[in-house]
Length: 438
Image (cartoon, rainbow, N blue to C red):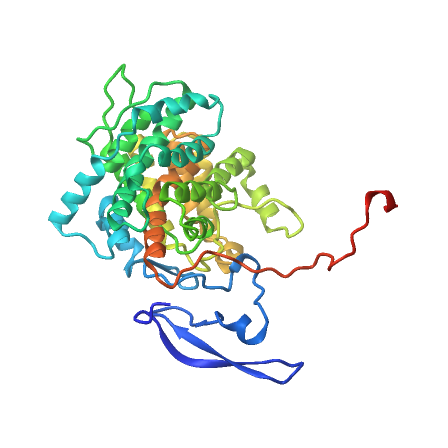
């Protein structure tokens, strides 16, 4: 641990009931949040490991980036509430904050935007790399492959012990991920790649690469660009979740940053992690019509029925997801901008939202609509196919992964990840030759 960020408040006594021997374990306190028991010396002092499947009660690192209080519905980036950042900042400001710890002034922001903008193009041979994928490949499969392949093209930023290399790699990754994602989409639908436009802002450029064609001009709607910017901000980081922990674990071995981000993308692809907003749309398709809502709500309340309402409640947040409040407003802004009033699936979603926030069953259990519920509806309205939903999540989360990776590399207390296990297989056995086995 970095001593300047933590304090040893007191110790906790651990007693071995078999021997009666007592052991003192330090209890560390951070700036906010639960205290942690320092068990680093536990095995050396006692001969015991801890057992924590999924690491749900284990702090794997010390971090200054993101803080979540799920009971109170709080999400802070470097101390700033997510609601304030999403309303008052753009994605580049928040990216700067996550990377460097402070919001930029006007001069710093302008330079950062310039540096990111001029890294958005891909090496032309990377564009040819896409041709190796089948046209019906899932975009996340393409993302994993292309991002991992970047380390074969950008050899001048792979020394993780060089701060300048880390900075260049960080900027490249943040700049190129929207281009990679947009190209994956264009390749899947058989349209030509649209190159980045340095005259556009980050989110505008992303939408332009997704939806423009060489045949006609495409003007990015300011409302849609702002909605995309908010989506990127709200998903930029979320503490030590599965994909972030994957990036840190891969990085702990000294792997290059492109390989680490590719590992994070692979972890995010899992339906239990990044696929939640896609699951919302699948659920809406299953319900089918507003007339079926009562039946499906009844099914959701039945503990013996496997049906679950996707996009309601959250594993971490036991209160209203703070990101969902902003996303709810953004969702309605997008629907109004696009003039969508008769789309059955979206009408169904809005009716379901109304029932969920008024029905005592959901209110008592704090099963509020979460950020995935609204983001899925926004993507659907904009015209983004469901297979691209998790890709957009990866675009948003890249800056958080990079910030966490940089913090991990610079932390002198970090070691290569090596979780322990509770072994329940056979103990040592005598080998039996093939001719003597029954």
